[in-house]
Length: 118
Image 1 (cartoon, rainbow, N blue to C red):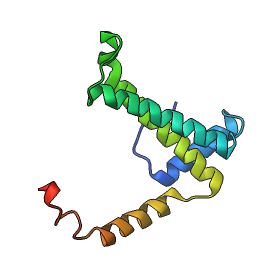
Image 2 (cartoon, rainbow, N blue to C red):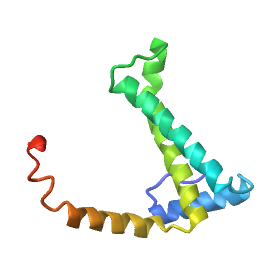
Image 3 (cartoon, one colour):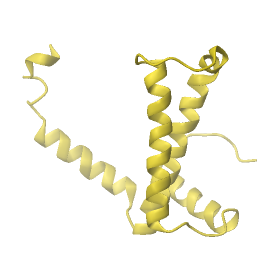
């Protein structure tokens, strides 16, 4: 069992790739993984709508496990997203940094001057 310590996005991409190739046998197709990603995002949405929205859990005991379930479903989303990044040659570390730079430049004043956020 691996030591649970902080890892970088790049390290996670490598871990997922190694897991797929040794335990998972091979990657599902990109289209299949896209469908799986949508399914996992739906599971996050289901829990969010019950924890923070107006929907209720079907069984009261489900509410007690919901925060842990939410964390697990978010991790599932990340796992499948990393699979897709690996399959399509996306370096998520670079992509995240470029995206943050873009948002910082584009939105430097946008949110600060948004009256709806005050």
